[in-house]
Image 1 (cartoon, rainbow, N blue to C red):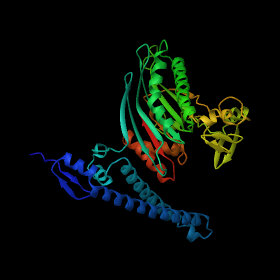
Image 2: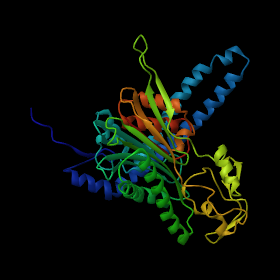
Image 3: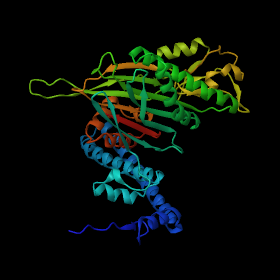
Image 4: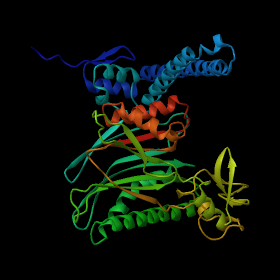
Length: 439
């Protein structure tokens, strides 16, 4: 049977081209194509507004039904809740189309590819989720990621899936990281660009790979990359900052076959490990969820004590924030009360050195710190199912167990990450949304 020649069609403009080059030229330079894209964006946004208005109405109806003493009214709660779930699904699908467009892809084309079973093989401008494979000893790991701009004007989230470190005794250390920038993207982009290289240099400087030497290398690398950015920020008076969640997988030469996971956290992104229980008498297993990091929020007891000991303030302004206790002059302007909703971060010069900018009540020291909090876990391939690293936009609306359940129901790491991001958006998160799933 003769092979069917590929068709080069712009479905958005309903035009057919002789080859892929002509189609690509049309998509990049045609005024008609751009007008149709803009029109499509308007339709998607209008639909999204209509859906969210319907969601808000249903939420009010559900609240009224649940709180009503009338048995007839309260009996409608189940039906309203079902309608609400359907509307939220439509809402996230509308946003999904917007995210495709932001990534430079044609939503209609990607929908057709999904129906044809080739969702991850879209051609030009492939939309995340992304997938990578890494090896540690005899184990092969798959990792997938998804990243949405969501309801914000810009996307300051970043992720890296292909960190590859090599110790001085020849042991490979693969890794991944999730980053969440704020007040600009220059700090988060600096971390993406420089942290893997500095980590490699610090790991290679140690006499061998061990738990303790790797911990030292991570702490040293975080301090060095932070100081690099702060040196630039001092010259530019830049306020950019970023969180970091880093995971490294390794075996030591002295204990081959024992796979370890080292998680380093700076900020309020979060990692979880999903592990199956041992089979019971019937062979049934359940999924348990364990935290791999603890959020660095200013109101956490140990963080509050550190901040207040330096003269900083922790106060509730919508969310808990670490705040300069008096006005500062920064970047040519006077700022009365500058605060941040995380107690550890990279960059954030004004909260690292407020005493240099007119805040006399704060002692020399850092109100926000770039020192990572480390957690080491020995992995059990027979029980450990997957690891999730995600930015706070996910955890603002989903509990650890909910996130684990969403990912467990998917048939691959990239789809698990994408589903988690989509669920978080449907649940009402207005933040940038990034998730990485490792199995």
